[in-house]
Length: 473
Image 1 (cartoon, rainbow, N blue to C red):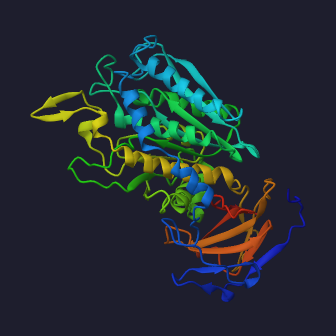
Image 2: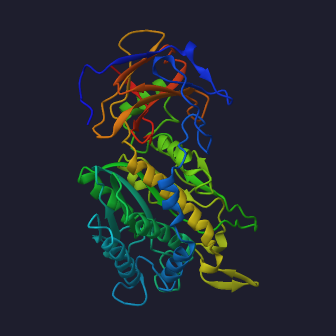
Image 3: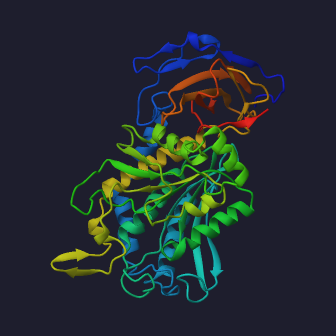
């Protein structure tokens, strides 16, 4: 473990010594030596992380046939409505809950004790779309990290379903795309990763109560917060089952990632700082979205990640929102364009057209590719260092250069840090400065004119998400 000392070296970068790549991106090493240009992927040219052999092997284990079997099994429970029967072994949300738990326990059994699977239940008193007191149960599988177990990443999908009338708890509601597809993704990742040893902890959650008002995820997020969990990234996968839009067009190699800018949990004081320095596009969630593009948009996943600068779609919401409300970075994966005839619909044929959220309208190869995106992101997050803490820009004096400071991480394989920057009009980080195992660095570029960030690097070359510095001393 690197020593934590106030005497860590103070470095300075002189930008005149920068080397420029063919893409026009300066890449600067400490001491003015030009760093090698990384390969270009779906993210920023300067910050993309190329998948290594270990990650490629992991992603190849993701099985579209298993995903299809899971979606079809969940659809076969008839309805999974939150208000449906909970003690029938064949039909209803209780039967689905018990089956998911049994499968998760099978995965945990081969984990060497690293994974546990359990139910997380509470009684929801009457509220919006909940007419009577109702038990809501999440299925939670936790793969404990072997190096920094207190650092946590969460991936979720919701296993409840609905038809046209959100209060109809008895009609068939197969919920194949919305959201057996997301649950199948979560379960397949749990199966594949259970056999591995991540450095940080990964939690796989199938939540209930989403269609009635994000109740299950709201409870889970509050439980994490009450326990002081250090969740550095959360993803919900909701409606990721089809590549076909309502007009019949297909986009089988794109997934949308909805990522908010202004934080849901922002305090008035934080808002004043943001308005002063201009951080609307630099929330922790936006940095997480950039990380997803950097590691999940490449030939190993076969997918393009389309980041959408919104918390969610118009008039809609997902299970990432309760985590945002608790101050955790969180984002939502969703298929590129939805077909509304196959979600939130009674199963019926009308004027010769089939309605209903049925498995035959899912694209299981597409779900597998979205699963690979999630797998690449979660594995890289768990193996890389955590996001730097206490990142700040020194503002005690008026200067035309920029001094950055941050806290030294505690990871035993921490190799150093990189300062990144971009023009204020650029959406992605365009410049990287290698600064070594330091906790402060000065760049001869005015903080008034560009945006800066800091990310950590370990000995295997894996990079953390970027921390956006706030004004400080």
